[in-house]
Length: 382
Image (cartoon, rainbow, N blue to C red):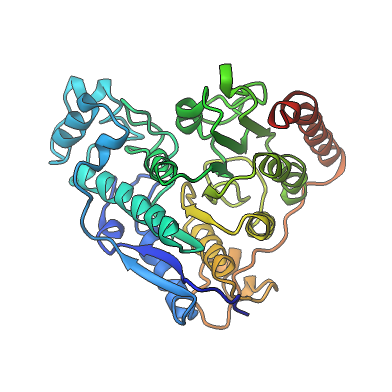
């Protein structure tokens, strides 16, 4: 079922982005862009008056200068040949195992940032929502690469929206804490940043405590929700409803910029949460139902089947398409990791944590809600 609207929702696509490779065995594979686009096309989700595909094949001039330091940009440009690493590159986090030098690394970074900038510009022009699957690089700092992220397209997009006079909230549900976005706006009350992630006690980037609430005028405008390993859809949705949605209600943004990584799923090889795309899409439905102007960005996800299904469901939700909710694992899904078959379904099999461990995780979720109610909500309500 489609929702009537004047402007179409924008899918930002790039055939060039999907062709880059970090390294043969690197967990992050840009081919996700091509595969998600292919799946959405096969299911008819990019056709009709409510969806528009915008191709981005050329980087915006001097795009990285919108956030990154000149020294970092120069190091990234030198790395673009993909042939050697120097000490200055290493100083800026380029040339490590997590952020390797590869041919076209600067071009890839500039193009990914441009795709998010284009998505933001379409929101400004009146698109109800926009999606860049090759965005959401939330670990890139102004002067260094980190955590598979060379460019902070998120901050670049947020600043474009702010220049247009829009009030912006950032919601990050990637399993990893959105540390560099937090760092950028930690003292800023005009941007609300929210990160729901696996606790930094067990996962990179080793931070994101609930007690990191902002500083100075920005105190209360940075909300962290660290989940313990094993947290499932039910635990996630408790904190999403009680903390994320309440914080947004109090802040009243014009636009929500969302980092919608799928590495919180139970089948992701790098993380320790137990979500499925059922809880993931329920959260996005809650968010979109109350805040229809959404700039959606991809993010993490290291099981390609999770990425394809999760982001196809995300795109379907943003465009108002109704897809079946049943589980078709025997035809694809989590068993064969192939949901490209026309008759297969996109939904995961439900996965639950049970027994005393579930009780502990729900109690922890209650503690996080209690902290928010006592320490943060009064600041957002001032």
